Amino acid sequence: MQYECEMSKRSLFPSAVLPAPLQAGIGDGLQGSGQHAGIVAFKDVAVQLGKRTVWRQATFQIEPGEFVATLLRLLLGLLRPSEGSVSVLGRTPWRGNSAIGYVPQRRLLDADLPVRGRDLVMLGLNGLRWGFSLPGPARRQQHARVEATLDAVEATAYADRPIGQLSGGEQQRLFLAQALVGQPRLLLLDEPLASLDLRSQLSISHLVAQLARERGFTVMLVTHDVNPVLPVVDRVLYLARGHVAIGAVDEIITTQKLSSLYGAPVEVLHDSQGRVFVVGLEEVEGHRV
Image (tube, rainbow, N blue to C red; front, top):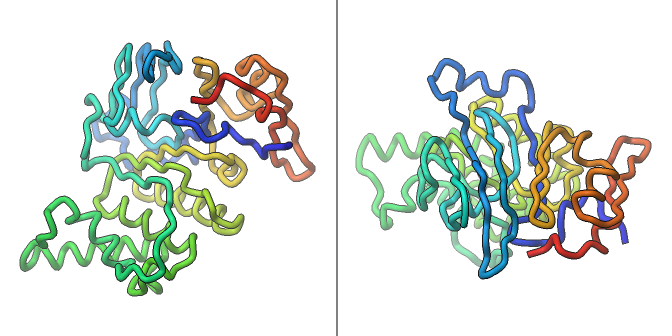
């Protein structure tokens, strides 16, 4: 069986695409801001689940403006490293950090769910206020921000429809809007392209890339299939057999590198259109959690 640049079979810490700057100007919005320490910093980090060490000695830094994929649970403060230190936006990760926008894996929604797309996006602003909306001018400002965000993700046309009646691509745009409406500095995406058709995958990938450039935030994503995001990536991060490999796409996604990383024969193929196929990961044991 062949996997089209599959990074791993679903695991807690999937090997993942780690794209870096999309364009030279993607980080321009952060230049001159005095923030030079990097958005995310890992130093000699190890992660242990129960008695098993998943990986160790991970040291790398993600700079402002990068479009990357990595370990979301650590960054959200849901898991602490067993060794070393993790820094997000200059601080130890904690739950509920409003500077982080998060889109979890998409779930099937009931078609009768009476929540409009617009209401879903509004929850990105007042979802932590126990249902109480701000009064007067503040409320109008909230609505203006929701409308601007809906427009940015091109979802205004169906924002008043029940979200359960929308297509997968339309739902994902609304979840993206919900994560962005609070104007985060870091956007985390967990399998944002799963269950979408190829056209929607490409559309969402380029939309996120465009918004990251325009708004100057950093994007980190985990994806099962690298192909839709290859046009906008620069670096990749692989996690396998307790080791971390990070570098340019052409440097990491090679037959020699992946075979060495996984300790088993893995072959990287390229078709006439430049698409990448990784063959052999289905036979590899030890890289799953």
